[in-house]
Structure formats: structure tokens, C-alpha cells
Length: 402
Ligand code: NAD
Image 1 (cartoon, protein in one colour):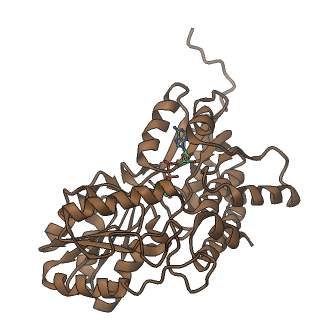
Image 2 (image 1 turned 45 degrees about the vertical axis):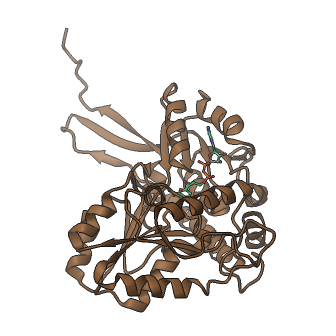
Image 3 (image 1 turned 135 degrees about the horizontal axis):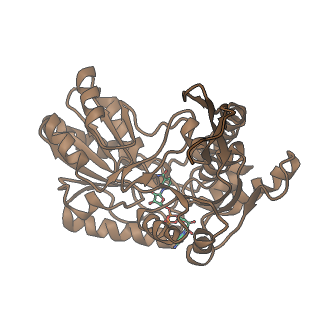
């Protein structure tokens, strides 16, 4: 039922929505377990004292989330905050509040005290900003665009709130000539077209070694031609419409820009077979220069920019030449090269021979302008905790200073 609501509200294919909702359940299950494993520490101070580090909830948390994984993003914020003992006010994206509101009703049923989880709905400037500025809110956890992330940091400055940010990306998906070719083509498409490309870690810069470049672009184009667009609730649909008119127009404008900046091997328009709906053709631009806007700016739609590279050094240089640093992937059968690349890339997540798998047990977050802090795993709960030192004097004599 939640998957269906999510698909209807967001436009994503129902099959993908079902995976998302299963991940939501796993997230609550994981943090339910972690709630009893929040540990303090006995600090190694001299014998005349005992020094303890204890963890305490950060307090009242404002949580602001985007529309691309509506309930998934809500779970990543609510589950660790509840486990840490915080209270929270979550503001879903104005485009997709439905599933968070539905689940909020269930918290009463499972016995969470009233007032622990609060959901407010509204627009960013009128509903999100007051939360960020409010003196009684102790922390803001934000997921969204880097542009709004910068506004959040400035708004939070007056009250010096704790702020964690999960922001955008322009992630490189790097294909070396020695990669398994069929897996590579699959990985290139999955990296950038899953969820209509409305993915923060989308592999939207497809870096391909020159020796396989021509063959790669042809094979990628041929396979992408078969991606089935359709209504979100049709189980055969692999790509639904975008979330809103605003997002549709934004992506369309990048399609037009791309035609001026590079060559088109596929798409570039709205699909002819759909007269209505915010559908976008899967689009592949190639011979893209990394300085082009379609290689630097987050498009957040099914648009790939294919960039050729010479060798490993060149690939790393291009991959790191971005204001973002959320994620990256490299495809190769050479374990030494794989590790060298993984260690050289300035990004919070590096996949080898895959792109996009995300586990609740593993950290998630960005380098550079892709964010501050980490979600998921023990890192996720840590962001909702303060550390207090308690010092107990074992010396019964006076301090004796004066
Ligand atoms: P957005 O930044 O426009 O909006 C995100 C949220 O911020 C919404 O709830 C919005 O209402 C609110 N908001 C907007 N202006 C605000 C303001 N002035 N003060 C307070 N709140 C405000 O982003 P979006 O279009 O909803 O989502 C897409 C973006 O989210 C992409 O950049 C994507 O990369 C990013 N994202 C990042 C991650 C991650 O884990 N790093 C995950 C998903 C999405």
C-alpha cells in the first residue's frame, strides 16, 4: 500500500517503490536494534578521579527532506533520531508528503509517546526556514540540493545549531577497458537511469576509456533505447514520469543545453508516445567536455554525459574535477587499479563493479559540496547524540589552591 502511494505521488515505477519501502522497514529494524547499543566510555584519567563520557540525545531535531525517495529519506532521519532518544519535527518535500503522513499515524499504534514524531507540511521558505531559525530546535538534518543546503547553514548560524547535510552530486561512473563489457553497459544504465535519474548519487558523468569509447557509446545507446517508459503502476514500467512540472522543465532545459554543448546519441526530448505527463526520454550526450555545464551541474533526471579519458591518471583527474563528492564507481577486473582509484577519489562512497547499492549498515554522505556528516549505520545515530563528560572527584582533600 505504501509502495503504491509512493509510486502515485512521486511517479517512480511500482517495482522500484516496493524495493524502497522494504528498505524503509529494514532501516527501522536496524535502528530498533541499535537503540540498546548506544555506549558510553570510561576515560583513562589518573587514579584520583573517574571520568565518564556519556551519550545524550541532541534534543529537538528539525528534519527537512526531498521528494525523490519520500519515505526512504524520512526513515533515514526518523529511525536514528528515535533510537537516539530525540524528538523530531519532519518536513517532507511539498511535492511528496503523503507516505510520511500515513506512517506518522502508525507511531501511535506501536506505542511511541505522542509528540516524539511530528510531521509538518509546507513549502521550504515558509515551513522549512522557520524550523531552521527556531531557537528551541537543537539540530537540523537536511537532505536536498546543495543550493538550499548553503541557505540552511546560513540560517542556522544565528543559533549555532548542529547541522548535517546530505546534498547533491555529479557522480563519475568510470569504465576501464578491462571491465567486463556487458556488466559495464548494464552498470552505466542502472547508474544513471534508475528512479528516472532522480537520484543524488546518479552516475551522471559516464567516464569511458578511449580504447573502448566508440563501442561503449553504441552499446549503451542500443540498450537504453529499450528502456520501457510507462505509468508508475504498470509492473513492466522501467521509467515513470518525473515528479513535477518544475522538475520536468528543468530537465528539458538541460536537454536543450546539452544539444549545444555535446553530441546526442539518444533522446533529448519528451517521448513522442506520451502526449501527457512529465515524461522525459532517456538521454545520452557523448563527447562531453568535463567543463560543460551538463558535466558540472546536477540535472536530476535521466540524462547521461559520456566523457572520454586516456588512462587511469586522466580518469582520476576528471572524476575529482567537480564541486561535488557524493559518490563514484569504477569498473575494472584489475584489483590493484580498483583500490588505487577508490583511494584517489574524493567522494563519500566508491563502488567497484557496481553502482548504487546502499546498505543501512554502511555510512552514507558526501565530501566537498555534497554534504556534512554521515547517515546510516552507527554513524547515523551518532549525529543525533551529544557527548557529555562527567567527572567524579575521588580525592577527599580540598583543592588547596588558595
Ligand atoms: P530542495 O533542496 O529543493 O528541497 C529539499 C527540501 O528543502 C524540501 O523539503 C524543501 O521544501 C526544503 N527547502 C527548500 N528551501 C528551503 C529553505 N529556504 N529553508 C528550509 N527548507 C527549504 O531539493 P529537492 O529538489 O526536493 O531534492 C533534490 C535534491 O536533493 C538533489 O540535489 C539531490 O541530489 C538531493 N538529495 C540528496 C541525497 C543525499 O543523500 N545526499 C538524497 C536525496 C536527494
